[in-house]
Image (cartoon, rainbow, N blue to C red):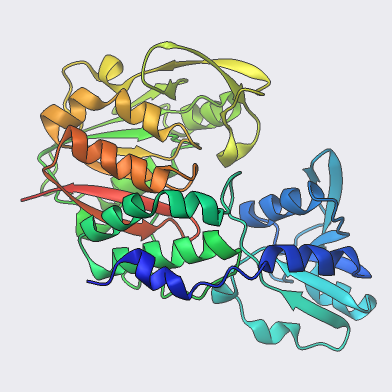
Length: 370
């Protein structure tokens, strides 16, 4: 098997991001295509580097009204793409979505000066320096060799290529389905299922779990839903107020019981942060579950995954639950998270799957060996 580092030798450190920033600094009119998490993080990335833009653009079928999005204390309008390209000349469009999910033919318009693809992720520290990559070559190669299938290795290669360059690199997405965490290929359902959902948001992953859960196999079901953002938790509570199987906790998952600073009100991107505007209660999975046996643990907690895994050590060591852990929030997560899991329990096969249609957001699946 060719090493990951050998494959990545073809990646050219050509200053792609720096060239884009320079180009945008001279552009007459700049707009971001898209208005989702990826587009909003791109907006933050540009504004923090002194690059202003006029608006977000969305396709006519997604446009409802001219809303505003607040980024870095600035309010930017969301406008209809089809209308704006007829009114604006020399419009430079920076893609806040991947080229792989849109029809690039829509940009064949004389009023568009240039369309710029870029990928800066959805979290701080997404872009990787050559220095960091070189310092951890052995770790990256080691995880690449541990992955259980070729698709996982391709996910890691494309993900790393994007993070090293900032380029929106084409990728063959998962063809079986587009779930977030409950992939059929990894769900060896048990008679008694206990789903631990860390970063439950408003319960969308629990809904996905319940929909896919085969009633002819699963006789008992419990979910532990962890959501520290109060606004999200209120909606989670409302969604499952009549389902006694769903145990809901306004808590963050961590290595121990304590309080931490937290940036709330950011929807799916709310996160533990030293510059947070509130404090939240956190606790460990081992403490909350006690003797309850977890069968599936999912974590999408914006950079607190390592600490939460430390707090789930007993569950991983004793029960070997299926794990679905986001590994893209911190630059070291790609190798540190699988290393920690295998240190706790080597009876796992490791897989990578994209969280969405793009490989920007990767989820590590640790599946017990049969």
